[in-house]
Length: 218
Image (cartoon, rainbow, N blue to C red; front, side, top):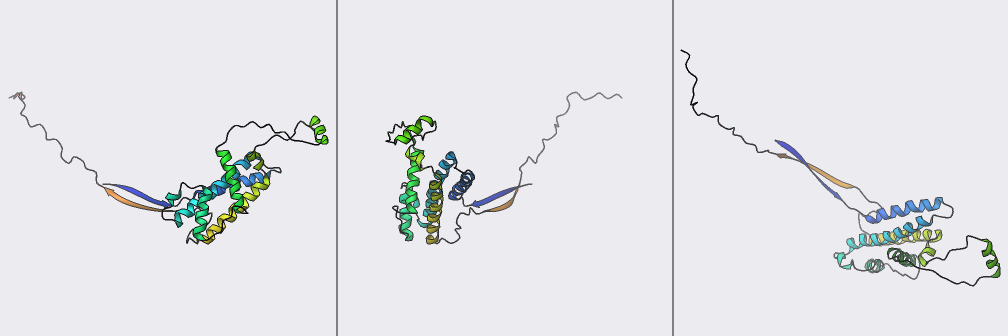
């Protein structure tokens, strides 16, 4: 008889907790550099947007029985629907919700990025023109999403994303749903006995008489 173990586990995975952890780690790296790391600001802002989207899905699944029907909505439209359900006035024309609109515009420009050729013409002063002659590091032309990658925008994005999530969390009032906490998991192990089926009969010995029995020496 053999024994085998069956392990059954349950765990609620909250992606918004992980995306928010990424934001926090990147923001720390940005703060450690006086002028900020440009290529750390890009993912930091992106993951701010992803955190809002993931949190909207997290709350939506808990507040709406058929949330899957609303999956085709944009992240901001999902948030609007949730706001109406829990009586939160969402105004994308003012902070903190205005920042979310900026974040998703940024996110879409990166997610659907296209090669661009910039050729701006700017009228400048004579003093600036004289400076350009000797300055090999004149400001480079930038796209809209590049201009958005500024330390002050990172600070505002983190602050406003956190405000929005806390506001929705408090108004939703879901018992046992702890904010920004991934939680543990439950493990239940059971043992089972297994009977191994084997052949219980052994082959019979050959009882055939020897056709050439040994001769009797007497």
